[in-house]
Structure formats: C-alpha cells, structure tokens
Image 1 (tube, one colour):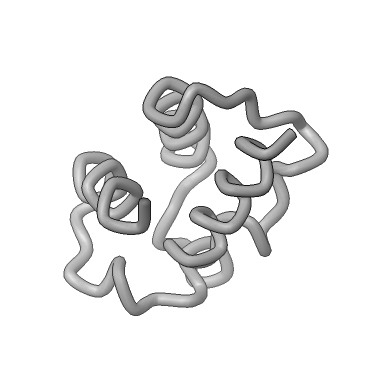
Image 2 (cartoon, rainbow, N blue to C red):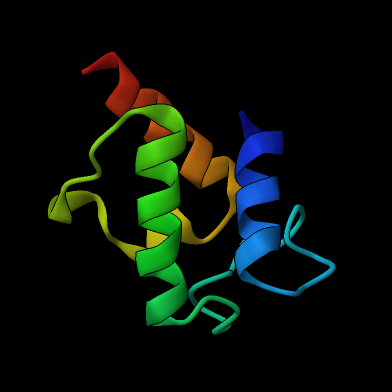
Length: 76
C-alpha cells in the first residue's frame, strides 16, 4: 500500500524525499491543492471516501500516516 501511495504522491509532487519525509504538511511540501488532488487519487485507488474529519495534518504528514488512514477507512 505504501508503494502505491508513494507512486500517487510522486505524480503530484516533485520531491526526492517523499518516502522518508514525516513533515509533508508541516514543511509545506504538499500545498492545499496537492492535498485535494491526493484525496481524490486515494479515494479512487483504494475505493474509500475520506471524510472531512480525517483531513488533518497528522494523516497526511507521511506516507506511513496516509497508509494507516487508508487501512483504517477500508476497515469501516
């Protein structure tokens, strides 16, 4: 799952440290428009619906955090 998320991120943002960065939001690597694009891509790729309550920095600061959020939403 993390590899898929990394591929999606790589299509949205040009950054060599996406797989190791834990501050994608905090450091401004992802803009608000990037996040909107990312949410759409994650929804489509993993057949989930990310609710507004999940759109918080801690869920998007790293690939691992995104994978954990996707896994949690897939279980619901």
